[in-house]
Length: 261
Image (cartoon, rainbow, N blue to C red; front, side):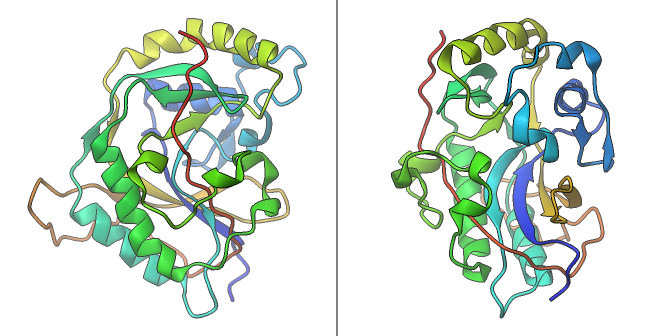
């Protein structure tokens, strides 16, 4: 077992250089794409000493999980997962996302889709179907800040449409509701102009956790090169991967309750 990474995830990470990527690096203090730190004092001033703002996402950078953190079983290696993800990317067309909004979900401030998107649902289901056969059993306790509070939402292998129809980008840890509302108001002033622009989910990112509390790293991007009803066979890899395995917990999110209009 290669010790380079102990966990993996499949995520959507905004493209480098985009306004959303620049916000994410400044807010979280970490750019997984470049593998370096970048803190915006202006954005961090919003934290105002509030615990959990931005919180544990500082180790991840800005992202939306397509497949929550996982470890490979003893019979699998990362090369098989890389090919599985690439196979999905070859047959999936880029997705223009519905408008995202800053809101509160499960006590966390998040960016969420303003409405469900069936194409996102299909993509999440497709990734789960090819990655899950390689995984260990979930171990939720390993990353408490990344989990969802209700046990019924921890259905890591299901593709129930009602469970995973919407994805989200976490912006904080779980907060007191009043504090969460305040952070939403502060962030909306910054993010609303950014989120008026069209956002495309044009690739999948395989990210890895080096362990020992180190930040997560981007290992490989997979361009979505498919078109409706047509299997594209060209390789979808855009970066070289590494043969590495790790330790897992998985969680699928069951919809959103937008607490702020």
